[in-house]
Image (cartoon, rainbow, N blue to C red):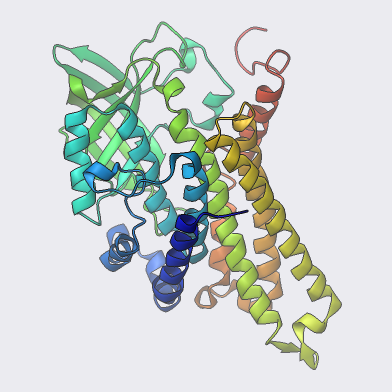
Length: 407
């Protein structure tokens, strides 16, 4: 892939940040990943470091103090940076990319005065996080098959009352949900129509009365990003906090498409780190009187890891370009690369784990973390099976199964 000068500079800055700051922190403080006090896991210095290298506020318009990327290659650049950060830690990458993706959404749909307020807050506070609240306890990626019927609508409901919207419901599995300062919340506003015609999105500050951050979800991997559960009880937001009325899901492609690309890129970053540590280990660790790589079974695994990584990278580059170009097959390729990366990189991580023998499953050695981080991608931004159904639906819209409702 031919990178622009800007992309090369950003990639190198991110790589240096990961090598000099993130990886040393992770190795020295591996126990913090298991702290049951979520706010204590990642120290403020890490996000401050991301601020110093200019990657914390990507997607925020330059007039508000953000870093604007070349629009013709914005998603490709997001992917490039996400890969580098996830090479250090996938949780940190997810903290940052939520800010990027939600910023793109806000610059498109938020009223000017709210952009001025919240982008200013985001720029001024390195610890400020954004979150996108779609998933619910009774409905997640299955809704995108689609189940476009009224009975499959969002359980979270919003009703207009004078100059306010009153929102009741619950959101689950929300990235940055536990500690974000500002949320984009999706709710049903027309129960008489299908989900795609009756879902609206709202801007909700953390201190809004009626909003409760119920818990931090303790995940298998990606643990330096605090996934959360939210409850809304007669929560009122001003009418100008409505972002998109009824067609919120149709208009959210600017969030969802880059999201698939970035998920694959983060997954790739984990795979690259697996390859780095495995390659170093097998060329220095002696077993049976010789370094591991001289054993043919080990060499074959290293070759397999490298091949899978390059295959993921190739599809990722094609899918990224399709999104940047708004190509007709962009949706199909987004889902393909999300699925392909999650399955292939998990195999890469398995090789890495097994090549380290008993060391691979020791918490303080650091390799099992990569395996856990790779495993969680099977469930992030849609499950593998749902994504495959969406691929078929996008390729054969007239004949693919509807998956819900009468034929």
